[in-house]
Amino acid sequence: MSKIKFGEFADVSEIPKSSQTFKTISLFSGCGGLDLGFIGGFQVFKNKFKKKFTPNSFEIVWGNDIAVNAVKTYKENIGEHIICEDIKNIDAADIPDCDIVLGGFPCQDFSIAGKRKGFESERGNLYKEMLRIIEAKKPMAFVAENVKNIINPKLIDLERNQPVINTIIADFKNLGYDVKYKCFFAPDYGIPQRRERVIIVGTRKDLQIDYKYPKSFHPPMTSKQAIDDLWGKESDEKILNHNQISLARFRPPSKVGTQGNQMIPADGPSHTMRAEHHMNIQAHYRTKHPEGNLEDRSFWRRLTVREAARLQTFPDNFKFIGNKSSTYKQVGNAVPPILGWYIARSLELALVNAEKSNVLTSKINGKQKTECVLV
Image (tube, rainbow, N blue to C red; front, side):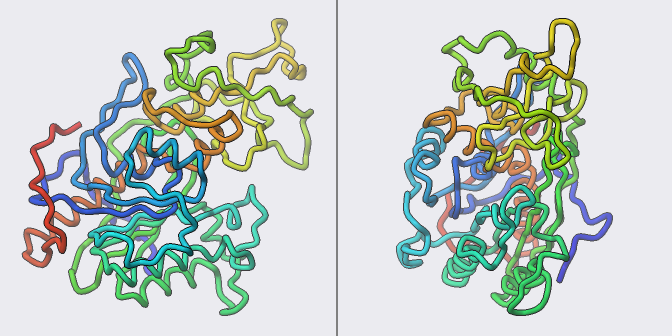
């Protein structure tokens, strides 16, 4: 098993352009957070905190998800190339050939916030569908994303009597890939949210691609810097999804659990935006009792869908389709586009370096990449 070692990071602040565009397919696409990061060319936040992210050399040519509203959102913002269907019902021959495979295979059964059934559930075994597509398409590389708990050594594959992560890595390696994984702490990459996610990257052994995870060049960001300009504008129809607000009551403090019943800090990154929230979205730091009574939660206001999307680093022109229960879930399920952009950037750098070594030529006739202006 190839776990990331200290110092194995790539500077992606400036990278040479690729001579080709890498055709990419996306499995378990959701609303498109990871895909948007790989495409690039978006901007997030407002005023002096605005950040622009340049285009990358990846073209998403096919996507798939089973959630109807997530697919509608994807089509609205990313493109019409996504199929709404259970991946188990899709023949690999019906999927375009590709250079890269992306896949945020379902994580709820590995999540601390979920039921943690792991491989004991059908959903927990969906990574095998990603294996099936990779085996059929033999891409240059793949990127898989999941929750931090997937690397918990106490999460056991009962059939093989070993940690789940060992099984997953071994299965990917058996397809002929060098595989490594790393748990990312989102605030380290300028994302205003205490999200932790495992990114697994595999590169084909015969192509000798030397992949390194990206080193961040964005400073930490607070919740206030990310969303404060939205306060008081909940009825502004020009701000997409900002009028979608959960009205679920806040529970009293409990030793059993606090998820969804916390107030995000103004001067630090927010708590994690979750998918399995049941409308229990965290409170905005501005909503306090007029007399300063923090024990009285009746005055708290939960984050809007747009505020949650900002904390996930979606651009303001990214429109989520569906009722608020659905849109909150789409936001919580997504990979932050900024994190996706960093992974894409580091993979592109590795592919460009392999090109220079004359060991890599795209299987697909990609169009020439135009010069892009760096961040």
